[in-house]
Image (cartoon, rainbow, N blue to C red):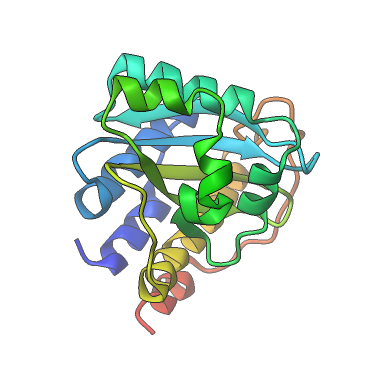
Length: 202
C-alpha cells in the first residue's frame, strides 16, 4: 500500500481504544511487519518524565510474548533515561536500541526474558505524540538490533505525525475522554484531513 493510502486509512479508523489500535496495526502491517508481529499502546506523558501506558494491543504476537512486553512497559513507566529519550524524539520514529542507546535498551527490565522466549531483539517504533503529552506508540518486532536511515525516519515520521493528528480528531469526534481514562477531555483545534494527507506526497 502506498503511504498516501495508509495516511488516508488512519483518518478513517473507528472504534473504542483497543479496536482503534488493532485497526491501526492492521493498516500498517503490510508495510512494516517483519514476521515477528507488531504491538501498539496509548500513553500519557503529561506527568513527564513519567510514561503511563494503557490498552496494549498486538497482532502476530504470542500470548507469552505479549505478557512479557506488557511487563517491560509496566517496569519502565517510572521516570528514567529511556523514556526521556523516547519523549524527546524529533523524527517520530526509530528503533528502541538507537533511540535509547544500546546500553540502556539491553538493560531494560524483562528484556532478557523476552529474548529467551522469542526471536524478538529490537523494536521499530512510531511515536505519535500530541502537544498535550498524550499519544500512542506502534512497535514492530525485529529479529536483530537495527539502525534506521534518515530516509526511513523522514518517511515514517510523517506517518507518525498523521497518526497523532488522527488520534486528536478521534478524541474530539467522540466528545469523550482521551483513550487513557484518567485524563479529562480537552478541546483541541481541528485541521483539515485533506491537507494533512497531501503533505505526505510532498
